[in-house]
Length: 398
Image 1 (cartoon, helix red, strand yellow):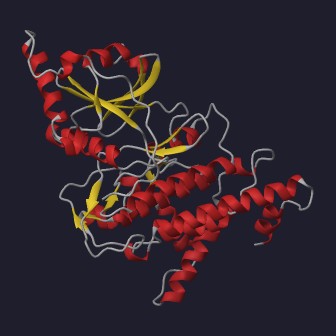
Image 2 (cartoon, one colour; image 1 turned 45 degrees about the vertical axis):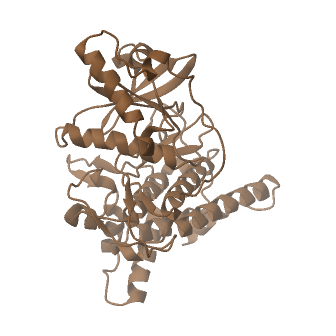
Image 3 (tube, rainbow, N blue to C red; image 1 turned 90 degrees about the vertical axis):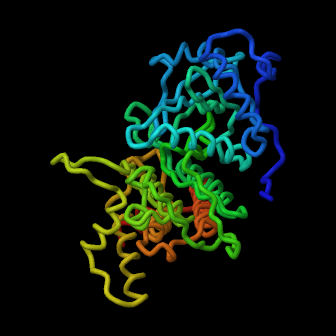
């Protein structure tokens, strides 16, 4: 049985019209009849859809102005996302699409997976699924609208004020809580697609982890929550390359360690302000995850032995902390990144090529919480005039 994080009611619209619940089809077009039948068949699967409301497709069409381009607010591997106005409330509607690399059956399986997982795994830092809709051969997922966009939007939007260090730490902490919750369930749930564009932010910049279309259960009866688990196999490599470890890209190995690695890339994004995937001046593809190996190569190469490897990680973290921190964090009046050195070290450990050496999410949650506490404490001390900018002193003397 899955642990419930807290008992709370998610915002849901009113019940569907009576004719939607009826098993008797009214004289309509062939496609309309098929759509209604599809919705009923999905709702008839209690393990998947019993607790999720099926919305009339015509209402979703009207709410998105027939999926108008002006309503489009995002795009992912499985579909486009639209802002919908329905029943005096704003929602986010993901319209699934057939991918050139993935057949329609795979896309529909992603749809079922997301409904199943989001209806069972409830947490304050996990996206709220309001319902689903099927019509015209189209499958839609309906979520609570997140007005602040994604972490990726906030980090890389040139027209808005940069996220402060305090805000970044809070987003990391909430995201770590969500992933820790998934990994501590039995069986553990592997999200499989942790990245900054899948961390959505509400009006208070509180994070919610979304896009569970690639989620998989980790079937291991001997697993201890909070520790690394045995690896499952997946035949098709999906997800975003910039966030995935070699054991997944090369061999299709899938375990909770993949989420830990991906979170390490998110840590680097937050620390450096860079994109996970970018191009350099020569139009060459640059992966942010390679920054760890690059700074390791600039220093000393790994030699055999535990101490030398730990030393190399420490050197890599220090190089990131000294040379690659987001310059916007150093601008007076925005923030003072206390705890950034420790989070740089954590990012390097998350990106360890040896999956079993990556720190479990329980430990990462502790580090993020520690950074938040340190940040708040030092901010209070500085507000009272009791300390100088110790960060710059320490950073310049290192």
